[in-house]
Each structure stands twice: as structure tokens, then as C-alpha cells.
View 1 (tube, rainbow, N blue to C red):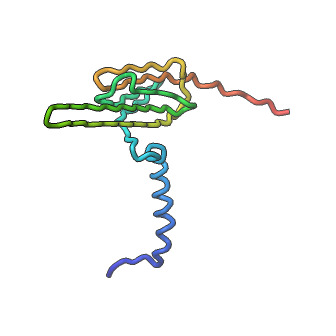
View 2: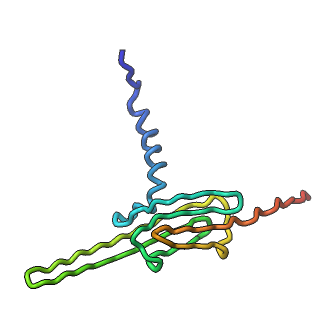
View 3: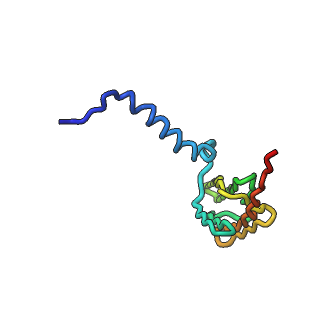
Length: 141
């Protein structure tokens, strides 16, 4: 005997909510179809975050890093044009690569102490966490 839901319409709201939940993670990066996401490793340690992003073929000046509240934004833009001319042919190749990644950090960080290093196509970012704020006792009057 085959199982069939009593009402198929019961599943649609749940499936729609599920789709919205997962799509919300990608909205920022999918806003522009020409923007791709880079491969990123995020390691959380007791007192800092470590971020490793793969950006092969990019130069240091092609990369922008910013932080707004607890959102780390890494952007990389690169354009290249190669031309070859000869008596019998003309060849022109263009390449453009745009990458963007937004990472939400779970704890506040010290933005002025962030360190970034770019070597051999790998971007390393060290983000120190802020000291936790002490619990403030509120007197009852």
C-alpha cells in the first residue's frame, strides 16, 4: 500500500519556508550574477577568528576587506585583456573575475587590530575577538 499525504497542500508552506531559509544565506552573494563566491575557511578560536580565502590569479591591490559590526566582507575584482596582432590575424581575450563573500561573526571583534596577509593566491585574515563585557548588575528601586 502506498503512502499519500492526506492533503498535499500541507507540505507546500513547509517547503516554501525551508527554501526561504536556505536562500537567505545566498541573497547577498547572488544579487549580481557576475559575482562568484570564493572558497573560504573560517576557524574560530578562543580569542580570535582565522579566515583563509583562496584567490588565485589576483593581486593584493585587487582585494578589498571591510568589517561592519560583525560582518566581514571580502571583495576581489580583476580584469585582464590580452591582445595579439600579426599580419594575418588579430586575437583579443578578455577575462573578468568578481568575487564577494560576507561572513557573519558570532562575537564582536576589535576592528582596529585585524591583520591581513596575501601570499601565493591565499588571503589570511586574523580577527581578534573583543573582551566580553562584564555583566552589569541593575539595582531595583
